[in-house]
Length: 114
Image (tube, rainbow, N blue to C red):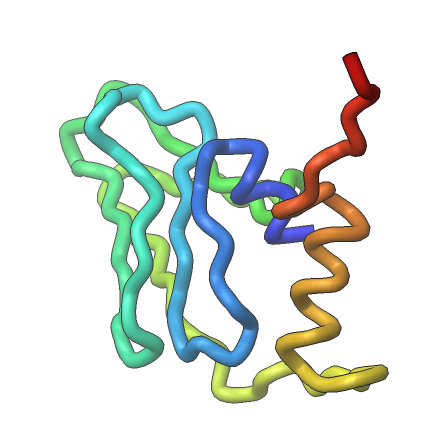
């Protein structure tokens, strides 16, 4: 889910055990806005200026849309309740295998001889 969203928007991939928040802009209006990684204790606040021409909106995983009125604020922070996972081998091996299997990450197709 979120790994595919980030990669399709040109963002990075972060190992699940890294305590961080990855923010990847989708269709940014400014070329200088790039994917950024923040430490897990940071609280990001996105404000809509009171003198903005219109309200703004935010979508979460492309589904849950929320209207941000002028003067409104959206806070993004690390959850206090991480999602537990079940691993076949270990955390890193399963994650890397998943990237390889789903995205052909770090793989090269066999080339035919000349």
